[in-house]
Length: 323
Image (cartoon, rainbow, N blue to C red):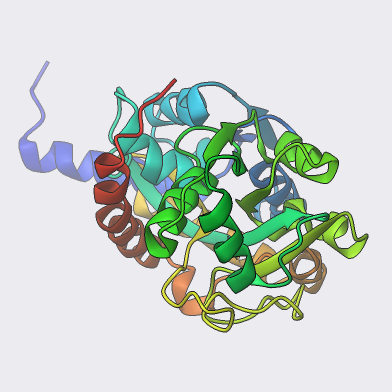
């Protein structure tokens, strides 16, 4: 049998990849969510998939793979075939913090092909309802006077709320005890019960409790107010300029996935995020959809790299380790 020349082989492979992209998707696509069902990333994924089924014309499956701060599910996605049928749904925790905290068998930046930046939410400083402080400045003064007894709940070691708390301590010269929970939901429940003093978390998990008067909000860690809760001042308005941090979400393919396939999924994601019903749903939860110019694979790649460069030194200096 004659051997194929390198040129012939290259042409054959290019034709095969092109044919694959033209027929994609030809079977169900699995979206790996590395957290339990019902969480923020799970909710965002399921909301988007409802509107992505039509342009893709296939069954879209959510696979919740939990454990190790999201690294188990993310690792499974990294090892999947780069054929467009496994998507890694991730966020600040899985694709930034975990790379600085865990000894991973994959690289959070180099082992993935970016697809699109998804809804983002700046965190909010929430306190128990019986807290005497009326605003952020008074609350910071209270922490300085009660640091030995004060407590802040987090959704886990190294999670965005935990790192936000470390940054908050540095910028306010305060101290308090961190109390880790198995998610933001249980932390909010203990905040309502008065078992902890405050949390720093995304508004989507706590706005209903705030509106019901069960907890209070001091400031949103962003340069602009949240459309879902316009009465909450920004940290700059509340007297803490420069305290900006939030939870962002993203979608990735395994490294090596063809660009044409990436483009098709990106188009489906953008279609879903432009849907009025989806936008209304996200707005009500305090989730901000990125501007059109930031919804490209290239924009996610640049943003992801910048976030790693910003946060890894802070996490490593704090010596945060997996537990």
